Amino acid sequence: MLPQALQKFINVFSKMPGLGPRAATRLAFYISNLEREKLAVIAAAFENFKKLNRCKKCFFIKDDSLPLCGFCADKSRNQKIIAITEKETDLISLEKSGYFKGVYFLIGELNDKDVIESSQKMRLQYLKNRIKNELGGQADEIIVALSPTSLSDILYEMIKDEFKNLAGTISRLGRGIPTGGEIEFADEETLKNALDRRS
Amino acid sequence: MLPQALQKFINVFSKMPGLGPRAATRLAFYISNLEREKLAVIAAAFENFKKLNRCKKCFFIKDDSLPLCGFCADKSRNQKIIAITEKETDLISLEKSGYFKGVYFLIGELNDKDVIESSQKMRLQYLKNRIKNELGGQADEIIVALSPTSLSDILYEMIKDEFKNLAGTISRLGRGIPTGGEIEFADEETLKNALDRRS
Image (cartoon, rainbow over all chains, first blue to last red):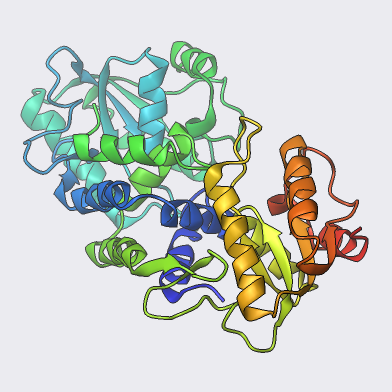
């Protein structure tokens, strides 16, 4: 009974994270009630996704016209302390805690097949080169900031082994995040504790 | 620290119903990780909103190329039983209950200033003309299907008064929907009861 255009939108958006068919339907009607000018603003926001790219240093999202992302380009941040995070949203949560002043490195979302993907191994190789070329072969600290799962335990051990000569300290976020929980949803205090008690 | 294009998207989407800044941020990163082709599909879905229009009979969303919406065009539905609903999502919930086989009439979302808007009074005038011109001056039944609030009580009384000569019965959804609750989120059984016990 719905116009095809609307149904298509609902189909696409109901597959997005945090949205189901009901939320997508609600969104669709909300947008279809907007004035033409507001619709143009939204359409333009989508067009702008084409102007995004990955930072060559840390793999975070950056403006296509800039050489680096905002974190890597910020000279006031300690480039010798590197936090390895899974997803952009994890990075944002850590950043919002306000307690981390180093830089980031995105390893990509860990899969549920309990295997480190080859693209993730390549990113680690890339990080090694970055430490060799830009930090004279030695970072002050690598903080493994991954949500605690069995696969992230494996990845942590792998990093400890492979980076032992490339970093003064290799730590991971401490207790404070419940096992099975997700960094993205932790409150700031929990994240502060996790940073303070890193081991 | 976020690219401007991404921040703009988050600003726009965090104001949408059901989405806050966190959900919008999550959505933004999800979309920025999509392949170009999928991005094009989403952009096209937005373009398609321009192809939508309001049904001239009931004010529901319809395809711009069609004369009427799917409900009004469906000859198998009883055109003499009219359910007055606030929002499209209310209509969809009623329709999904599967117990209503009449047609609809959208009055528009009631405001929180406890006043029936002039545009809503105009729509009622429009419904009167529709009954006069298309149903020979008499509908079998008007079902006032509004979420129960003090303003919808006022609107119900107004409709009972103004349509008393234009409909055999004027009813409203019966008990079953808790006061302060919203039609949109009622389950099918509750909606069935509300339809059965209309008074």
